[in-house]
Image (cartoon, rainbow, N blue to C red; front, side):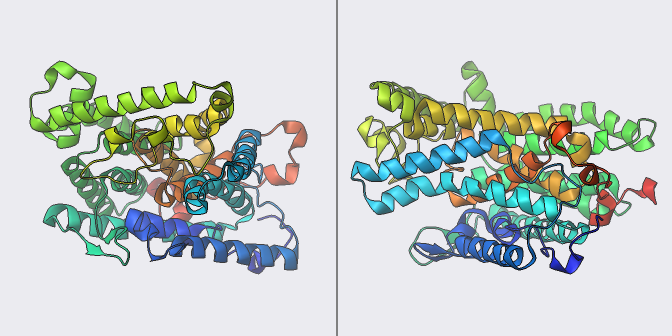
Length: 457
């Protein structure tokens, strides 16, 4: 580690770990623990941020440890956050209800977490990152246990005060995404450790849970997360290693199994019916087509409504207004299952309606930057468990956010923006602005986080 501030002065974990662990362990119902407008997620975030700021005030800005090359998430995310703040402030002048304004703008303002996590991971010690990873793996394990119980017993959950959610209640989109993050994490553990039995069991149980649920976007999230986990293992394994050869042999086997199993699952049937409408024969497939058609109708009408005036097209309609009702599309989304809906079930269509073309371009830039960074920096990500976890969180949440209400809620926004900051902190910077002392420290190996490679021992 670099010379500088003593290790005791550094944070014990990456800032925000407690809140992210709560979401990964309890997903939607965990985000509702508390009494509105004070929820446990926000309390944990506030405490973590306060502790970090107090330590920084007492000891000054700590030097980077050398794991990543910068302590900020980059220009494009900074512009996105700045625009969100400006748009939210101007929306207050639109004579909207304060509660609705807070509800609509808060998930976008959670993007400030990217700045916190980027600065924190850049200065976190090896031990702090190890502790962070262990906490998050523990949270994923807790989620796997209760989700498996609820899925296979049909348990409807224990209502929380206020009726917003029920403890141990499954919400397919976000729970499938978290099962995917867990499956990817356990897959890495199985690849890189001599003790493979429990990680393999966890992967198989995760997949059994996933295949029993109905979300098409959730299924895509699982595949994306496990694909990134596979790439992380692949790029970090010597080319002549027997493990790498074995992993190559697994690819066609996994594809063949997927092609056989997928059509037998509810989510797979719904996905096939979406791609090939003529194949829809079951009630589930016909329902999937109906849902997809309704959403497309909503998306097209919301876009058309946003385009009606140049100012709305460029800057959006703001926060606090009910643009679904104003665009005449609310009836397509509300019914016996959903009420008080405020999102078109597509994060990017929602951004266009609320923040216009400027917001959409900036959000698209953030997503593109994240994906490019993940695939350009795979070798660095493969050396550290926290970076790997952050990458899997990002790729798992994006699909369910594109077809549902996930990033517009704390249970999606908190882990996503926390992971986004860590991923973007690993993005390369110009050589002229980098410091030699920050680049000479070799990143911490996976083996120090429990993802040990037997070949390294």
